[in-house]
Image (tube, rainbow, N blue to C red; front, side, top):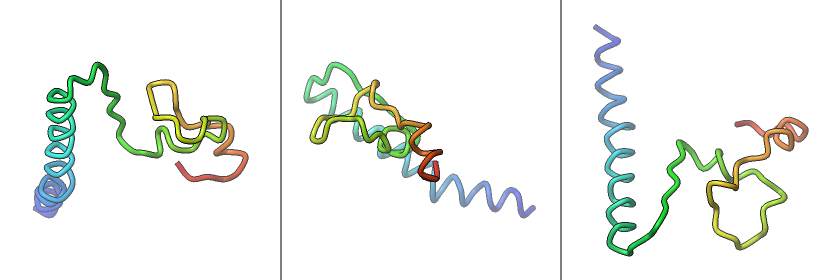
Length: 76
């Protein structure tokens, strides 16, 4: 029974807001005629890359540098 309660809470507190937020972003992109959208599970997937030019938008090429994170003990 506890598993089902946790699953319900996860759905209500984590999954539903994530789905709603993603749909809102996609709708805004559609209305703005954005040509490409990259959806990642977390900002951590693209944020930790010291070689990425400052001020440049993140794209499908801006993945976190895994070697840099391991060397500097950055948690992923």
